[in-house]
Image 1 (cartoon, rainbow, N blue to C red):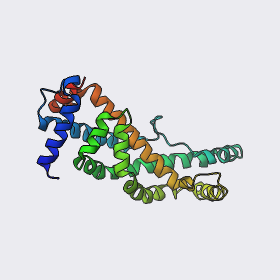
Image 2 (image 1 turned 180 degrees about the vertical axis):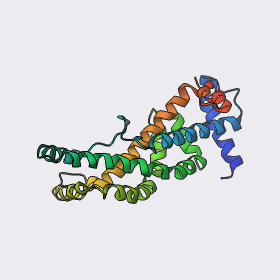
Image 3 (image 1 turned 30 degrees about the vertical axis):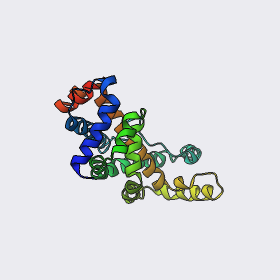
Image 4 (image 1 turned 90 degrees about the vertical axis):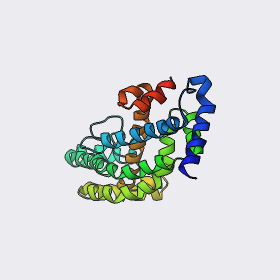
Length: 228
């Protein structure tokens, strides 16, 4: 679908669904299309910037990655026998791994916005608070998991306890006590890093909708201001 047809289709969707109820009648087709894409891209890039830096995960209680549930009891035991420092090192390494991996998501997130379909737009507009999160996760989770994993592994491999915990998790997974997707520290951290990224994208998008003028973009202010 070429850009002209996309803009017309998306604008028709936006105007038909929202114009009378939410005051978009005065917004042009082009502005409606650019406004939605602009909000999504702005939110995604803001989330990457917030998380892809030192303490982006470790210092944020909303997304900080804890030890996986199956490791908590082992961690308590290790702490009790004088290995608390090693436990702390592992949790720090897990969060540093996520912080190092997140910047790699930028290009794929932007591509997801630029290639957004009319169906995607409809789902975002008619969906609830998680519609933006669901959109990005559906478009980018699989490829980003592949990209993140080696970066995560490089960080966690520096901590001796990671290998020991993997041995425990592998046995637990074999007995059905642990989900296969969490059978290693690296896979667990990769999944939690993406969960945190999509969560923060959703939070940033909410901010834009609440205060579009505060973004400094006249276009976002015009389009999302009309949605109030």
